[in-house]
Structures are given as structure tokens and as C-alpha cells.
Length: 87
Image 1 (tube, rainbow, N blue to C red):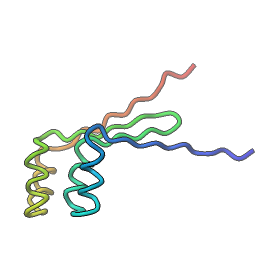
Image 2 (image 1 turned 90 degrees about the vertical axis):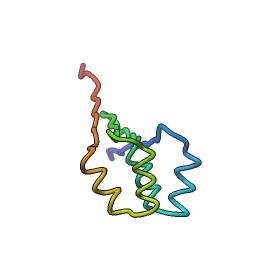
Image 3 (image 1 turned 90 degrees about the horizontal axis):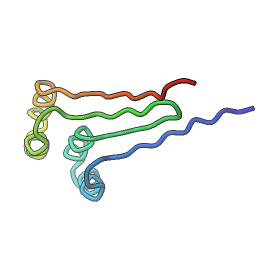
């Protein structure tokens, strides 16, 4: 019997802005994704949170992307993984 892998993702802020920026200016879309991306497989749910200001991250991604990379490295990200209790 073939086992299928189910995978879902979500974004906790406005998806309309995310899609707009991913199409119009990709670095800002990536910066927005890094501020609240969530994905779920069959047995775990993972979320990435940016530990700094979303405004400054997107501002620098828009005007000078290397500064946004440095800002992301300095402020850091939190990866939260939730697993259900096994029965």
C-alpha cells in the first residue's frame, strides 16, 4: 500500500500582500514569509517567527536587501515545532 505525504502551509498575516510582493518584488515577499510562515505535515506543525520588527525587515528588503539579511541574522528567528502526543 502506498503511503501519501500530506503537507499544508499557512501565513499568519495578510496573504494578499504576500502574493503581491512575491510577484512584484521577490525579496520583500521572502522577508514577509520569514515573519510568520507555518507548515504542517501529518505528525508535526512548525512555525517560523521573526524576532525583530517586520517594518524594518521589509523596509531594508525593499531598498537594500543585504542589510535585510544582516538584520535577520542579528535579530534571529524562532522555529517552533509542535508534535502531537503519541498514543
